[in-house]
Length: 132
Figure (cartoon, rainbow, N blue to C red):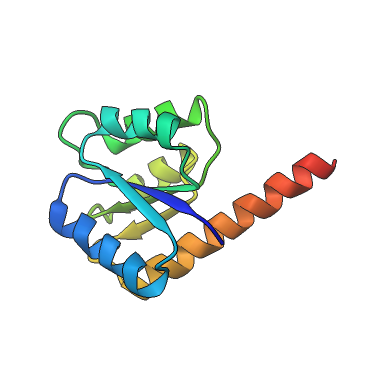
């Protein structure tokens, strides 16, 4: 399955960890990244990724703002990956139409399983919608 994932994250150690996870567990996937929210929104438009992994703590705008902006023009799966573990943060993200929420530090195999599940569900729904 050809797939492109956009990581919107300002911590390069986290980005490198995600890149390594994909290289080992899903080498045919293409992973691109942005380290600012505005740049990430632009890359969603220009790169047409199949999924976004989004941090809530970005240097220019919040991840919530990025999520809301992307939802104005796209329904692609968005997985929040953040250190924020408070229930209010999880609820706010899910109510803002995030598809999943993972707290750092994350388990690499779990992240990959969630990414694959979200992409599979999104593609299945897209096919179903075209057939209706």
